Length: 335
Image (cartoon, rainbow, N blue to C red; front, side, top):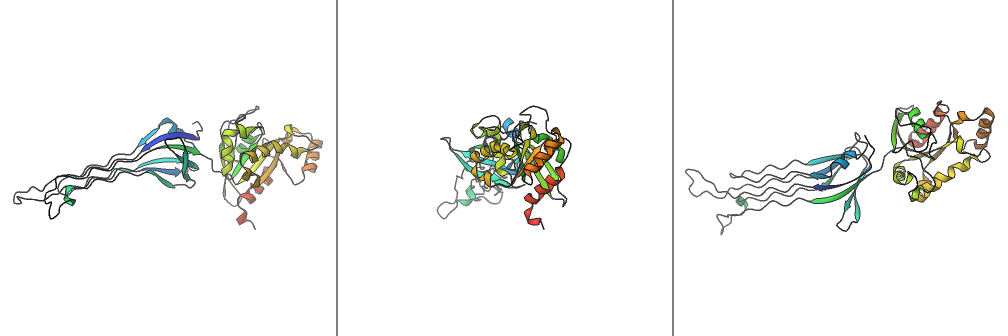
């Protein structure tokens, strides 16, 4: 299934059923009074977050969502049935914006918990039957209320992936190989830039059995915050992560000043959202298996404790790195 993180749809709630105009007719009751029942309520349109969905793909296929109308009231004081609510499931992390007629948008809901609901449109109330309108001066009302109309809204849905750890880095840094090495995720892996065209999610458990969700964010390049490369579209997914894992391939570093290579992506993150500069970040040099032993030792001596050295392909150095990830994601449970 394609990863789709935006969709624009129309939603309409149901109209309330009309009240009934009816009079009691029985053999031995020649002048029975009004007994028209009320109409039923129209169905609401409700959005509900679900852990079982990963994209907004289904909402790109179907653009209009309509709840059913309530049924009309009936004689003998019988009420019309209310219409069922229309429940639209979306992935956890979905933001819903209401689009006004002038095109302006207002954030209406941010669904960040599983099973979290939001009522987008309330169904119209059912009309009252003529049994409610009798009075001392009106013994036989021949009218009832119509049902109230439902609501209609144009919505834009935007998915921001919810993950504990966002894996960022330049294209071909080995992010897909890394997430496949530490989790059961199966992203596309190839030796060329921009292999990853959509965020990949991986789930791991630490030694304490606590779940950690990782998101592999497509490769960023200089100018990503202005729309260069693929980064502008996917930078928004970094906003929801608690920890950043910054991967750098040893192919892209200067051994005399290896830490300088992280500056490009760091700058793009800050320009997109200055708050990202405050996010805890682990810096990781990947593909150390490509370095001769002497250069590998030089790199380890230069960076000391400022970065981790791993080979995702050979699964070298992953245990220490993931232990550090666990400490940052679950700081309150550390001794």
